[in-house]
Length: 231
Image (cartoon, rainbow, N blue to C red; front, side):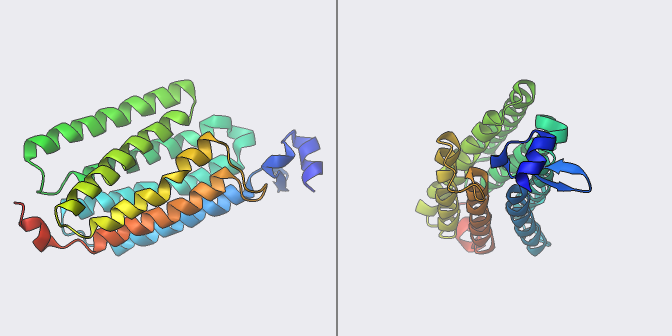
């Protein structure tokens, strides 16, 4: 089946080409694993249906945009033969917006001074716009990944450790979440593909599922009394 579609559509066999209604499609597993992320993100979005703080509001926006990003990403992979890299642009845009809200959530706590929050928010916004524009101009996912790495390592992991050391215990889940995601950097850069039916994208997607679940555990277990000690 795959060889037949490859010959007709000129899609390499390693991209697992298949045909539906005469369309030349590819990477079915990317569709499956992206939609697993999306479903998980939307479930967590609805579990935060009544946000009690700016922290929760921004995390809720993170899950909304991240869910939409990964939902569309499935189509970007499967329909790549028709839309090329441009089919991934909506995913990239929504992804950097999601990362922005994750970073904004992490700096929204009253543990930080308002002046510090304003400066960090400006950095987050400038970073988002800069990396997104460069990625779209050069048609490269590398810059989207760079934006995510800075956000999740500096804002989520960095501030997660900072708050945890200050005694806000729920941030240990945030730290664990980023640690789970961290190997994705090397999976992409080293092009580590465990199997043709489970490549680097699929492996990273599964890590993302666990990451956003651990983010939620940290959000849902946040103790407001621990924060008030630093007001």
